[in-house]
Picture 1 (cartoon, helix red, strand yellow):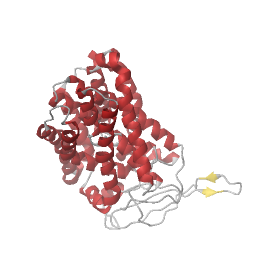
Picture 2 (spheres, one colour; picture 1 turned 120 degrees about the vertical axis):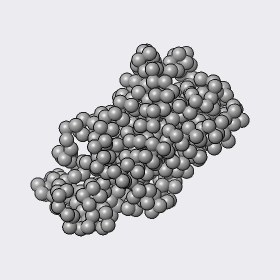
Picture 3 (cartoon, helix red, strand yellow; picture 1 turned 90 degrees about the vertical axis):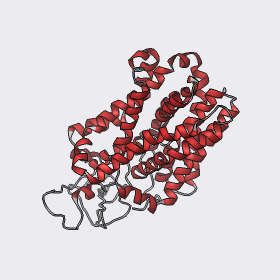
Picture 4 (spheres, one colour; picture 1 turned 120 degrees about the horizontal axis):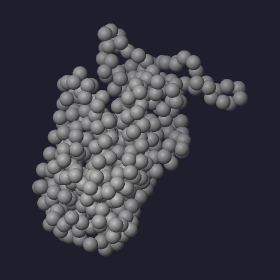
Length: 414
């Protein structure tokens, strides 16, 4: 799902570059294409180091209507090249191939596939339960690899240039969300296995689906990808540590085992993807044309399989399990936005809210299966898959219809 950022980049290619010609400004076409982005209204494109920013400048007629100019007016500038917004000009898709348009459509319909997978998982579990632990681990690792293939070392340098913005998102993911999970479990007096499962999923890193939701909501996709990357890497330490601290009093928690599994499933594939993208760009460019389609299929399976494996429990205790998980996500979305709004602009606040409310429920389900004997520990993660996808997409669609002010504070430094 992280590959959505690749489609956003594709959408912005209003200028064509001939790879056979040497760039006149000293940077490669590959770097040019990887730093294309949008920001509401005015046409700007400036070279500074390795960034290019292109936008359309609308013309306002006498009667107040907005007309798109026949020719793009471009001028050189370099301001927040990575501030990618979902507010894409209508005709930008002309730069995409039919295959890429299909994949983008399939990706943005992620909530539909989750609902379909949920229905199949509950009423036809055998259709998805063949994805057992080993295959589940392999599929999740591939999704981490696909995210790594979209990243470069420059993305990590941008984290260092935005420590405050990325840091607040990290704290929201690993402070607000885990405390919410613990508080809800205690307040509702959930049984030990269910409380442990709720705490575990609340301690998981951000999910790739949050990048899609951020794109739809007109948030900052580049910042979303960076936050997902940071929380994913941080999960090696934070997920087992927080689970041990918050749930260790309820059931035995193998923190070392959790850390090793997280390292194997999350960090190793991500590092392989980043190194491949950095040192073997030609090879990566061939792979990356196929990974989005595979990613959409695997993500649907990773959402449906947990539901199918706990279908019997959901049929008997569905309502009781749905409320605490839904409350966890709703509170995380709200607090993530409200706290961010005190420091940042609208676009960044939406991004942090979505990152806080959407996490890798599939990772939580895998860890619960591998390291906890009671099968009920995995149930909250299975329910979370549905609540996360539906809640995040509904919020994203709502925000997409809420305009962002032209003078919205820009919190992201390229």
